[in-house]
Picture: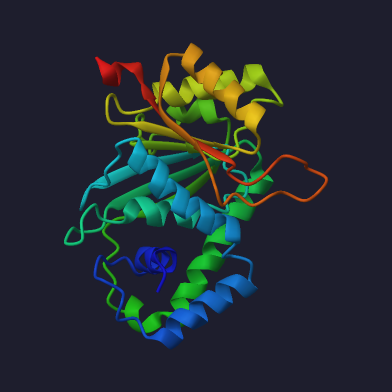
Length: 259
C-alpha cells in the first residue's frame, strides 16, 4: 500500500497500528472508489509527497502521541482536508503513537464551507464502508475536523478555536488578486503561530505570485525556512497558462524563533 493511502486509512481508522496487514483487495477497492468519486485527485498525492520533502528540509519533525492544532485559512472547498489531517496525524517515529489533530478549516464563503463539509464526509464514508473490519478497532485519540464560514482574521471571536496554532496552512494563496487583503491575512497567520515552534505553510499556483507572497511575508517579520518548486505539480487547464497545483510550497516561521 502506498504511504498516501496508508496514511489516509490510518487517519480514518484512528489507529497508530501498522496497516500493511490490510488485505490487498480492500486497499485496491479503497483506491478505486476514491478515484472514481474524484476524492483521490492526483494533485493531492503530489501535495502529500511534497509536504514531506519540504517540511523535512525546513527541519520539521512530526511529534508522536501529541496534540497538533492546524488551521487551514481561506480553505475554499478544502480538497486537502483529509490529506493534511492524515499527514500531520502520522507519528514521528515507527513506534510512536498517532497525533491528535485538531483541524479547523475557515473560508469567508459559506457555500465553499458547505462543499468542504460534504467532501470530507464523503471521503470518510468511503473508508467506513470499505475498511469496516479495520475501523471496528478504532482509537480516534481525540482528532477532529471543523469548518467555519467567517473572516479569517476574526478567529478571536470563537472560544472553541485555539488562539495559537502549531500549523497554519494556506493553499494557493491569492495575493496577486488583492494584495492589501492578503497582507492582512498573512499578518494574522504569523501572529497566530505558536512562538518558536509554529509553522506557516503556503502553496502557490504560479512563480510570480509566490515571490510576491514571500516578499510580503518577509516585510511582516516572517522568516522563510525553505521554499521549493513541486516537481510533480499538475498543470491547470489551458486557459490558465503557467499555473499548476501547488507549484511552489514554502515553510515560514516567526523571526522570534531565531532569537
